Image (cartoon, rainbow, N blue to C red; front, side, top):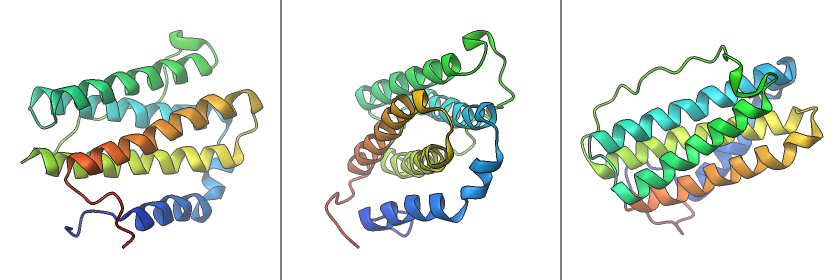
Length: 163
């Protein structure tokens, strides 16, 4: 396994560590700021999968599935923001920069972005003051964790490795 690849234990520890290490950031943000932050991360993932599909850096079936999930996440977050989808979020999406040399390299890159996004959901859910959003945000977070597994498999990583 390469140095960029994360083991399952490291991934879980990393997500938990991120949530425990920075609870102040999510707690200091308003609910709108928290949702806009998540929206920006989901928009970034959608842009990354669009680019990967255009560059043939991901299996088309997997890429289309992940892209559709991210689009659903974006729509859900836009609806959760005050003003619904009409709101113009302050979140900014930068186009993905790296050239993807191979499908496994892209899968490892995308898995890292998904892990970062899952960690953001963990952090927000730990401090969220809106009970009605717990279930939908938890579902999106779980989908992100499933994306990590699918991407690790696409990268040819051992999904059962503990170290």
